[in-house]
Image 1 (cartoon, rainbow over the protein chains, first blue to last red):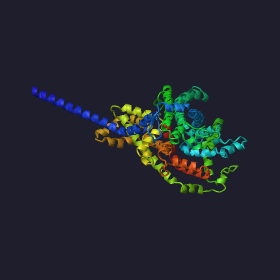
Image 2: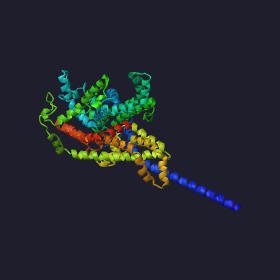
Image 3: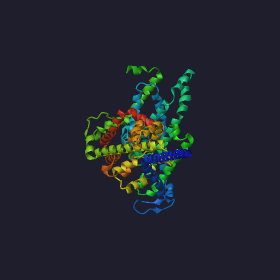
Length: 313
Length: 279
């Protein structure tokens, strides 16, 4: 009898250990599979994102031309770039571009989205037409608008027929910024229209129906339903567009090469030219660190103000 | 048609309709100008008043650049590079999203948040080390150099993880009990179930890669390895005064994208709205 109980409990114990060890190997196997599935992406990001950004900081402390051995210069590169009015101007113009492009873009896109959210004939068609510039590459946009802003191009032909003055847009320090900003508004309008339309469609219809029953005018329901419920979408649009604007490269690269006299030299362009035209890779890295810090701080401020992006989705 | 216009009931709607018609026409002016100029003779480009329909349609503007410069090669490079990196992006994002959503292992959340944090690093801020890295790998002017570094998307991983989180565990458990291998589960259950999100990511990644400029500008400087945007920009700086030819190649460059857009327009706009962020 005692013998039998012993045998039984022994069996039970061994069954449990087997079960546990199975469980253990199962869990380990799952951990290994999980890591394996993440491995391709993790490797790519370690090699092509994390490593380069650390290197950017590192190289920024050296005088480096890719050929001779790098010379450690401490904060030398940072002192040089902040002493240079060219770099300071470049930061200033980058912000002028970002705000100059995206404040009008967001306002126009919001008006457009509100219009195309109303019941209109061929609504889908108007939306589609306004979306076309979004799918056209920045290079083509820049090439076409460079001709539009040519001294004798379409823009001046139009101004001339109205009896207005016709500046040489791309060669004038006063007008070149507009020649970069106007095409950008044209290209980006449709994208933000879609973002706002998505935001508008996420507002449940019952709110509008309820307010109608309560006798609210359409202006009132706009003010007290649409505006507050669209706020997260607008906040998101402001942040993505600001960051997008600070990273601009193609329009000035194609249309003006940063000219005339450096008026349209945005940060990405001055980094590119300092590195690949002047061979000053250390100095370019110091500029890149500044651009990175500006964008990072905007993202962090945004997280503070609006919560993380995850909440907005 | 009359039925559609019957929707218009009040003066506000009529005003909106007129407004939107004018606005859309203004938006189309640069494209019309591009198309019109692309058929003109050089001495007709700046003629006033503007001739929207050229006296003679010069088709040579389209054929001559294709003969003189390797546009077809650039087009092939763009198509090949964009397709390959899109496949890579979709695959690595789905794998990592699945791993971060449905597996438990030490360091998982650290890896996810680190990758997500790289969304704050603009490419523009790391062009110098990236160029040096690709050069040291011997990948300058190679397809792997153009494709592999563009094969991961932090946003794609985030998007896929969100969708995988919504997928019921029972689906995977049941397959496991039936003895399916982990790779089999991923291939035959996880991918098909998340197909809508994958195709949205695919469209988005393709457009992003097709229009990519700064990165290929750095790593492909040999003529035959350029992608279409880089080739077009180089053509622009070399032939900057031959406007009709310049506009003709611009038309050719946007034609494929526009065709795909018109076929898939709803998917396009949906994927834009869904993703909400650009690279």
